[in-house]
Length: 84
Image 1: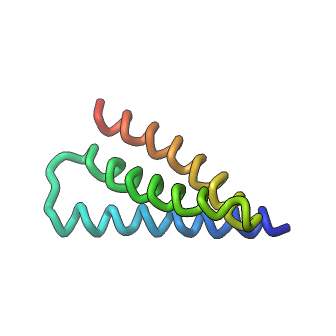
Image 2 (image 1 turned 180 degrees about the vertical axis):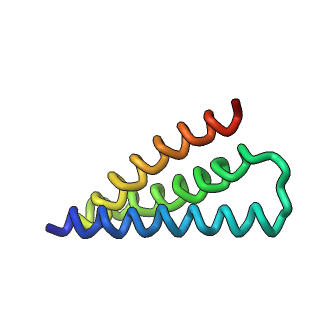
């Protein structure tokens, strides 16, 4: 049950990274659309590293790592689509 709750928390963290990257890209007035997935990916990787360090201590962190790894894969696909 803790892994499922951690997964849901990971989804919320991924959405937070997405909204933060949109806010940051808008504030910087970026013209290249492919930079938005780059900012999201950096945020997801940093959050994933923090969760990965806590994974031995908590099952919540394991669910977060699973959700963030799926989000990074989707973000990479989005970045490739924006780049083309």
